[in-house]
Amino acid sequence: MWTLPVPELSARTVYLTCISMSRPKAKTRLEALEEEVVNAADRFETAAVAAALHTLADLKAKPTDKADRAELKKNYTQRMSRKGHPGREEYDKLKAAAPLGRCPLCGHRDVETLDHQLPKTAYPLLSVVPFNLVPACRSCNTVKGETAPASAGEQTLHPYFDDVGKEQWLFARVHELAPAAVEFYVKPLAGWDTILTTRVHGHFRIFGLASLYGSQAAREMSSLRYILKRKAPSMVGDHLRDEAAGLAEEDPNLWRAVMYQALAGSSWYIDGGFALE
Image (cartoon, rainbow, N blue to C red; front, side):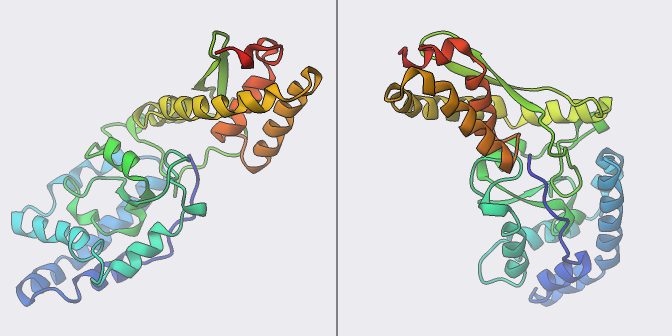
């Protein structure tokens, strides 16, 4: 998971921008909800800092009026995410916050949309709150769906508020069978508490990162086989170690860095396992 800076966009400003061009009846209804939205945004930020979004379950029942809830959800679907509508500029700013356009939830695919950390269907007051909107690839957004945490341990990592640091916690092991493959896994750091450990494992599982990284590694190793075949046997290990070190300088938890690290640590792979098909 990639950490992102907390958006500087004001929840109140974004909300007022989204409702600015609404039809009169809807605008009147939404203006009456302004303070409730701002208060919900403040509660969200406080809870997110404490990794306690599960404590916001009471917001699911607010507002009680079905028409109000519908209009709040339209703030995102019709007034923010749609091109040419009032909140689209803020939508694009949030999407652009991901470095290199890479999804912070999986750290691999391209950003295509915004993901609601707490789903807009269950939490309509948070539909356009910037802290609740994370740039994401469509796959991660779809996988996460409408789920919301019922406990601290069930909360997936939030790129704005959770920082798992630059120390390595993603690892891989080589399956020494033809053709060679690698399996990715999480190894908790000594400083992680039980809840963070549970959350990282849950994030890894919910977003299917072992499968995603494993399939990407298989593709890269297929091409790598031909590169290594052209090298002198004594140079194979050096090549793998150099690749691992170079990639780890960017981030030791990149799947490619971890893959090369695992391959460089496998004497079976270096001694010819890479060539077996």
